[in-house]
Length: 276
Image 1 (cartoon, rainbow, N blue to C red):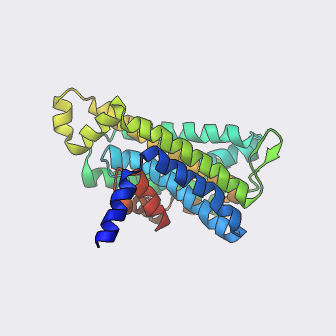
Image 2: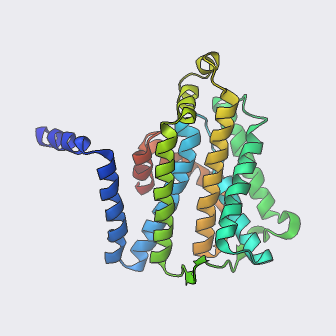
Image 3: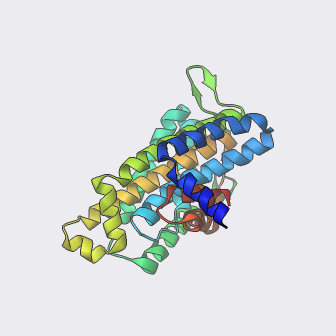
């Protein structure tokens, strides 16, 4: 036991920046020695890492129970798919639209329900997820493809390079994961990040100390929902086929488990949960 304790102490003594750089180097080099199936597994894990990081803002930082997160995942996927298939919008522009649409829908959802807490908030978000799924299944507006979903989504292309291989899609997801971690670490130490922590620990005390609780909650929902939309867009452009099953309740539960199993509010914990 003493050996393991000494090893753990040495690992904890390593500066965070160095640890992250080592992990990044491993993430870049590891798939080069793998076959396409193993790369696809890593890519799927990366998608769930993004989803976990997005839900971690809502559950881990702000302390709100969100059990309909898969709805925003599906919204992002359907946004980029519809824009590309129906209007011919380039994929990366569609990704931006997916982030905006998912974020705005998440913000609009929170306004009437921010007074709810705990189980009551969880029930409302579950209901929202089911509403989104039923809209997609019933092909409301005639653009969602119904139960069959949408297919024929183009793959992303930039400066003449098209992301066709599994490896290229893996590195695309890895780029967004690295960007997300940098952004979240800055948020953790910002005024907004501290406000989220106060709201999570004691909402009444936070409000009494002058924290704008409504704004803090709404911002958490907006950012978390927007990033879930990005994960959905990345999924759609790799698979090129999407269906309403993306927004089912069990998918939301799985994303929730990714955050909870690794420890809420912990970025490394999200990686542990996604890998598990």
